[in-house]
Amino acid sequence: MLEHGFAMNGTGALPASLNLVEEINHRVINEYAEAIAMLSIAAARAGGSVRDTLRGVADRLRDHAEAHRALSAPAIDAAVNLADHIAAICGAYTRATLSDRNIHLILKADDIRVPADRGWRIGLIVAELLRNAARHGLKGKPGLIDVRITDEGSYILCLVSDSGRSERDSAPGRGQRLVRSLVREIGGAVRWSFTRRGNFAVVHFPAADAVPIVEATAASAVWNVLAAQ
Image (cartoon, rainbow, N blue to C red):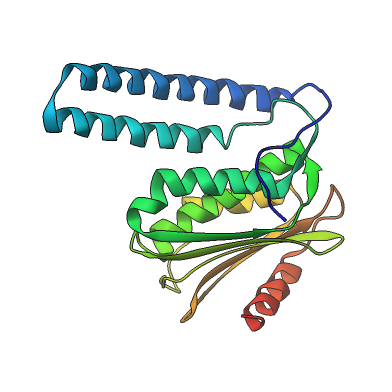
């Protein structure tokens, strides 16, 4: 099961598209660092409640920078432990966003080794599903988000659920479109379900680059998961 860290080994070159993403990511993190440094200097010069407020803002920006760093493209083309990678993302997002809202996150993940590029995309999918759960499922209110990553042999099942309630007939937003696009890139399928017991998103994808999973398979997986609740 999940431990700590981001396990990689070996070396390799990044595809051109990942190099571009990594360059943008590097610049954003540097801008976070500059803002944090400016706030820290201002806090050192201030006093009393103003100093405490500036330090609090700097700490919050630092948490968001760490959450952003957790989504960085892989530095080398190797294998990653998916449980470790998702744990890092969940931990960073909890510190940056969820803890202050009194939203509790539970992660249960099997140890699964996947190529770094594939693990990165899976991490982006989970991160977006977390944001959607906090913003639209729980609507920023206290509650529970449950993340499960399970090894089903030839495929991997990812479930992100929350204890809130969403509009059943609401039109898909940018978040859902982004998730669908990323899921297609790894040959998987995704299905959302909104029930009185909470909201569920199930992503179903091959354990390795293989034959894509059809939408009907993901739909069946949703109801199997719900039936087990």
